[in-house]
Amino acid sequence: MGLDALIGEIQSLAELGVGWDGETAAAPDRRAVALAADLARAVGPDARGLSASLHVDGSVIIDVADGEAGTFRVRGDGTVVYVVPRIGRGTFPAGSPEGAEWIRRLAHIAAGGAAPRKDR
Image 1 (cartoon, rainbow, N blue to C red):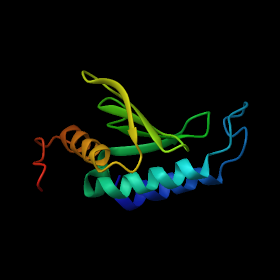
Image 2: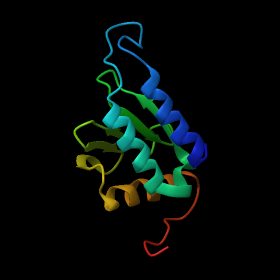
Image 3: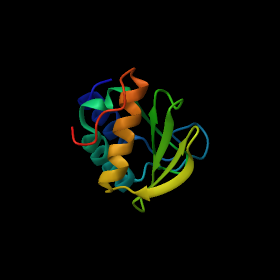
């Protein structure tokens, strides 16, 4: 999926309402949707390996390689919670350039590329 398609997918999540899962899921957190779209833009062209979905709490999930290379949950409070195999769990601020760089590198590697140089 390309960058524009990913951003469109993220923005379309905002249209869902309470109970979008057929149960009791929260409505999408509009700030989480905006922050996730900003994060995707910061990742740039390597976003082709990313996909987005909604968590039942209204936050936005961004998966790298269908979650096999990492999962990032963007919360409306501006925190990104991550789980990355062989690295672990943690958080970083949604506006963090380092966080976007990390996701970009994981997406690039998951797409079959070598780890890109940081100064690229």
